[in-house]
Image (cartoon, rainbow, N blue to C red; front, side):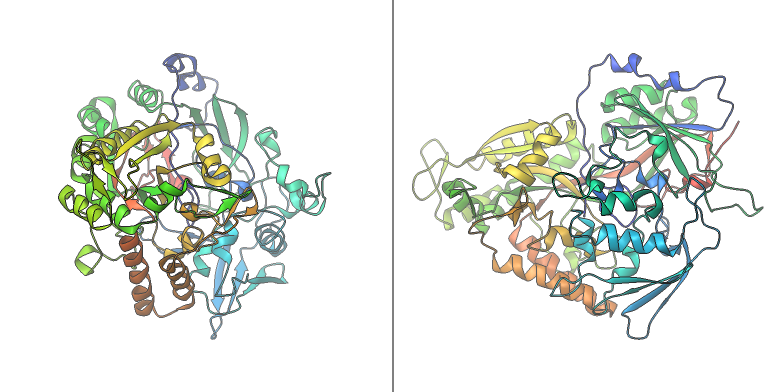
Length: 591
């Protein structure tokens, strides 16, 4: 699961919101991108920040360009959740459930006109995604079984490719929705090493690359990119989809992403007609936009709860780096006490958070899976819930050996004041408000919380490299398939941030893996091996119970999915899980 990845079958990544001066409203107004000379159907969308790379295999964050420029062997229908053919027109699964043979569509081409064949599929998996010299968290979801083995892939002929797994692996078919990459454009970069001994691929197709050089197979290709201003896409003339009359898709010729690094600015630009899409809509903006629907000639769409888990997490790593404890030993004893984490969960007033910050348009979450997942365990089915109960929180702390001084300040058994720092990404107003409320809520049970909204890239460096943090509040993607979160819940997973196995590529000295932590990892392996849906549900029910009992993540509140789209954009079918442009190839502009 990646930090908020927007593409199907991949994990949504954390939504990054960073501040920008109000001058951006005029300096980067997307109205400048609409020109009388451009007599082609175009759509103006927006993005919160610049793309970080044009190389899909090296991307682990949003926004990214890949949902527009790439497709995989299969796709997932956002309305039904069903798997549908994409670059592959069909597939067959062997009786022993260990082999899947895909048959590619005839006549597929890359955006430069070169043939797209089984060779590209084999190259994408064998030489990129499964290449140990190319660090990509896609490998986490491709590891199979207790031994964490990879599948093998082989070409049968130009149109057929066969995947073999070491054992039955239930999630594998959905995983094949990851993009196919062009062998003819990237093979040399994969096989050639630079002066540092690493493949040149690791520095290939960065955002300093001319966008016109990026070879694609999706409905669009990139035409231009100006940092901090815009990304422009144009129709891929070699895209394979056609409508019922045999005419090429997509209908919309040109898409402009305006880089607007502030949601207030984006809202103003949408209301003034400069943008065709406002997504996501913040809860505080819903009433305003709903009132302006008719006059503004747009439609507000509402789906279900957003497919992410917004959570608070403590640093549970008990290891050392260069002989020094990663976490202050005093704080580490607090954080690794399950009663401490449960007390924090009971002390946070999530109903208030929903009513005041989310304007009542949010949902309290208790599971890392979305309710639409067939594996979701509800509170009614036995999932533990931490409803607001500060008295219960205090009692848990007292029973665990904590105590209060005459001022009501919480102390541990040795008399140390309970004080820690809670961080999130700066500029995300909702998360900053959540931090403020958490500080107030935890102050009521005697804890002192110091708030630290910081630059998103600095935050990521703390989580993945320095490990210099106490607690953080962010969001991670959640979906229908539990195994998509294996990179989080496997103790050795690349996104197992609450107790990371490696930092900066080096193993953590003296790391301790808790029994419940190891059990969740074992169950994720077992769940992926199990093909019977009933037994799979039971396995993943147990993982959700363990997560809620031990709280490596403290689930909070998530907003409902909402979007506003101009009425000139036709063909929008808003799904329960959101994404107004999920069927972009079928949308058209009404003149």
